[in-house]
Structures are given as C-alpha cells and as structure tokens.
Image 1 (tube, rainbow, N blue to C red):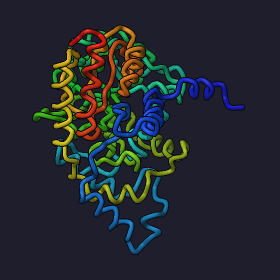
Image 2 (image 1 turned 180 degrees about the vertical axis):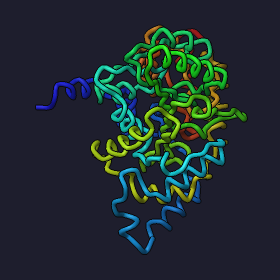
Image 3 (image 1 turned 90 degrees about the vertical axis):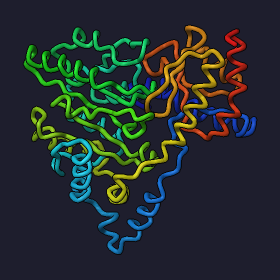
Image 4 (image 1 turned 45 degrees about the horizontal axis):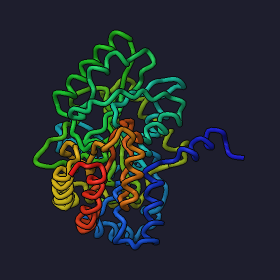
Length: 396
C-alpha cells in the first residue's frame, strides 16, 4: 500500500500533465491536426545548432570516464567556473565556482534549496499566480506555502500584502520573473520595494529571510524588456536557473543554483546544498549535460519564433473579446475566463478541442493559462475554435 501522502498527491496530480495526456488521447481520436493543445510549457523551438554540435562533440570525448563518470556532488569545477564568469560578465557580479551548484533542472534546484533551508512548519511565501508545483516542493520538506492574493490589475506582485504576511516562521520568498503563468516581468521598482520590506522584517524578527529566484524564463523577454538580476537588489538571494527554456532542453534536466557568498550563513548553506543534492538521490546533475551546456552559455533559442506566436494569439484573442495583459516574457497568455469557474470554462474549451489550463491550478481562479510555445500553424488552425468559444458566451 502506498503512503497516505502519496494517495493524496496521486489523486490531485498535476492538472497540466493530465491535460497533456488527454491531448494525446484526443489526437489519436480526432487527428493531431484537429486538437489544439496549449497545456504544457514544452518548447516547440529547436535547440540552437551550436548546442546540438556541442552534444555530439562532448559525447565523442575520448575519455568516457570523464564524460560519464561521477564528479563532486556540486558539479564539475570547470563548468561551475565558466557559469560564474558568464554571470559576472552579464550582471556585474563577482561569483566563482564556490557560488555555483549544478542541478537537475530548476525543479531539482528548488528541492535542493528547500531541503537545505526548511524546518518543519517553516513558511515560504509566494505571489499568486504561481507555478503550482511550488506547493509540492515546499510540502516535500514539511514547509507551509503562504499564497498572497493576486494583483489582477497588472499581475505585478501584491507587495502591499507582503509585509503583513511575514512571521517569525518565514524562511523564503519565491520570486518567478518572467512569470509562469502570466508572462509578466517584475519591475526593478517592485523588486526594490520587496527588498526594503524583507530587510526591515529581518531586523525586526532577528532572522534571515531568503529570496529564492526561480528563473527558467530569464532569457525569454520581448520588446527590449530588461529582467532585473535579483542578487544585485537583495543580498539574501539564491537563484535557481534552468537551461530548459533558454536552450530548449527541458528533457535534459540541467540547471544550477547561485548561492552568493554574501548571503547569511553562506558556508553552511552551500555545504548543506551539496549534501542535499546527494541525499535527495540526484547525486549530481547529468554529467554530459553539464559539459555541453558549458560550451553554449551565450547561445539562445530564436526568440522571434515565440514573439510571432505571441503577437498572433494575443491580437486574435483580444479581437474576439478575451481579456488579458500582453506578456513581456516567457511563453504564456493568462486570460480571463468568460465565467467565474475557470475549470468549467476550460472544460467548455475542451469541447472545442482547445486544451487550456485553469488558473486555479496557479492560485488564481477565474483565469486560464494558454501556452503559446507551439507550432505557429496550430495557432492559426485553433483561432476559429477560440472565436466559437467566445461566441458561445456572446463575447463576439
């Protein structure tokens, strides 16, 4: 018999993944070209050629023990050094390999850092809407996720609610910008306000409050929008990064943590995160992936492909009467449902063979997420279905 906790987790398994699996069944029944699956943030853009070349070159290394063997739990020294140098050049920081831990994607990194920081009952604050798996990542270590109400005017963080939510149990604030599911980039002014509140509360409560900056979408920003680098704004910041979106490598599970020397208890935190990497069963990030990404740190996917999708879908939905803000980053639209029950709305969309994710999954009822990291022609084929759904609600 499985554990009681897993019974609940299986019953309430990811809505996003469930819709993705449903999409595969519908494609088999109706034909793939007649199903419009916007459920999963699975990049449709191919990795840059330089990445493919680096994979081939690395796999052909004449020393297979080096390519495929164990290394330090925190990753290859030379890979971590290259990543630190790349970050320093881009953001004016002063990191070295002692500030970098290679991880099994951003998700693996977040679990490592929560294992490192959280005692049972510690609180982790997040701004709604947020990536729903945060609930599981925090509960894995008996923490409590504190969800702050969304600011639906512009989906910038609800900073006014932050200060009153901080208690003596607060250990972490999660920041995710560009944001999943809204595509919003948090402004420098907003982040500075957040930093000021955290500094004040740390002094009042005589404790350490860390920002964990979840950054898988950092490189996906449009129209020249700058994504502030939070360690330069708030000292107690730990960054979780992933190459899944920037290089279109979600299945390769490779990322890193940045643990600055300036954070409180740096030595203990870094050492514990290395141990957490091992005892959580990761042991180390994939060796081949570490080596090939270190050769491609300045490579990026062709962002114009996503931008083309963004423009078509956003402009079309607005024309049909849908309400949403224009995303500045990532590859999602967060659209207001035509009725208060977003799950019912998503079910009605499914009748049109549109697979979209209810906003309640992200802690923000009344909205739906539409992932536009899909084929452009599929978006074009889907538009009559979106228009028909709007007509059903008498919106166009």
